[in-house]
Image 1: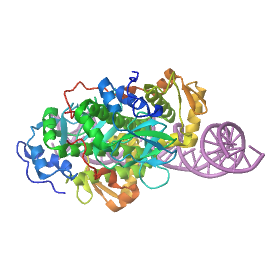
Image 2 (image 1 turned 90 degrees about the vertical axis):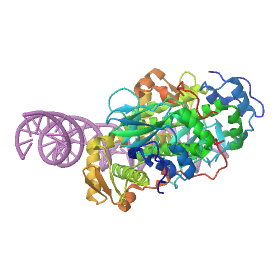
Image 3 (image 1 turned 45 degrees about the horizontal axis):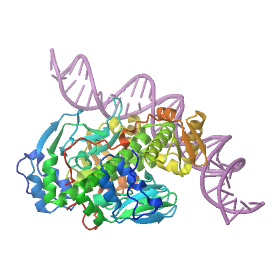
Length: 254
Length: 254
DNA sequence: CGTTGAATTGAGGTAGCTCAATAAGAGTGG
DNA sequence: CCACTCTTATTGAGCTACCTCAATTCAACG
């Protein structure tokens, strides 16, 4: 599960191999694939907190910070449909070719790495496993959205919030950004509320309840979960987050 | 927007060109593409109402009936995450290569057409536009799920139900299965409730309210919408349902 | 015409909402 | 280091949209 140590070339520490870790841990890539990925012409980009950005048809991987995907519509409180963490692919327009209906918004200052569609296409032609990995990220992304649907429509505020925290912990841990249930989260309670379909006030009370039960403790934006308890509250089953490989024949790799 | 008249070969009327209409109306296919599609070795399949099915890595297009995608977990009331209408691609496992976290369940007797991954791969190699079209369906599918999230978490029961009906009407009309706001819907109020995150009782009362306002009239499972009113109640903007082509260069067509 | 699944109606109950105020941090400038 | 400001977190107090439970009616079907 550890990120391979190669691939430090044309990018500074910040943008380091971290961005490949997510792709790597899907187990679809060989070391050579990651090596090849690292040789792409990656263009780093800094995104200021609160601003929106749009990778267009580029492959864009978040390197640091926290972003969300939200409806592109007019101003006002926009629903968020996904939380984008380091290592995640920001948008799949480069593969679907459809103009996105959502827009990305940075919640904190972010850094992202972009590679042009042309470069990605030619890399992928040589290394189909990379396309595989990207496509399975797309599938996971969709599964996360579906899980959000079930969360919002069937779970209570307490379960929902617990589930959200479990999911974050899982995704961050896989990127090496959480340990022992500890991680930091730069989202306000209001933002969490928008994502979970709860009012900010109720998020606050829900978090208090989680703290009272000892499932959660906070210091600033540093959270510590009692994983066992939190998961049992949430009914958290992380299957949907992992790229289970159907042991299928070949796909559009060729 | 009419389906081309070719492509009636190896399939009976029921499975006729209808299944390509959805792909066709995304405007990404040339007549030759549809022609080529129709020459695939399609295997028809009948699915009994209430049963579940899994296309595995096949390309599977619903030809008639009504199906839903739902969580694969244990028994009990499962959350539905998508409604699958004729012309829709049932599952995208064939492209993502990930084992699905959802399962398909037929609400009525259904017919579907399947083509094997191998066949699809070799067709797509010759005709990249077909992959294009399939991938943009995938994107629409995701957008629909995102819209469901915003519906459930920000819209009232009335708006949500209205939105649901508007979406169905839009999708059915594009397949030639709705006219003047009229179409038939074989979902019980309880099923609608599961999909929208509402109790069956409340769905009932909400539908009554829509009828009282004159936005809806029903006869059996035949619905007639006053589109104007319904859309204004719902705040329905169908952009997310249409495969807006980003005028991008080439993708993974090659 | 009895059975069965679905729609409808009635009657409470409550989870989560809104509004509004207060406290607590985190900068920022002096 | 303090005063000021702005954002975020917290608390209190009602309120309501939606839920649950339990009948009852309706419709289809053998």
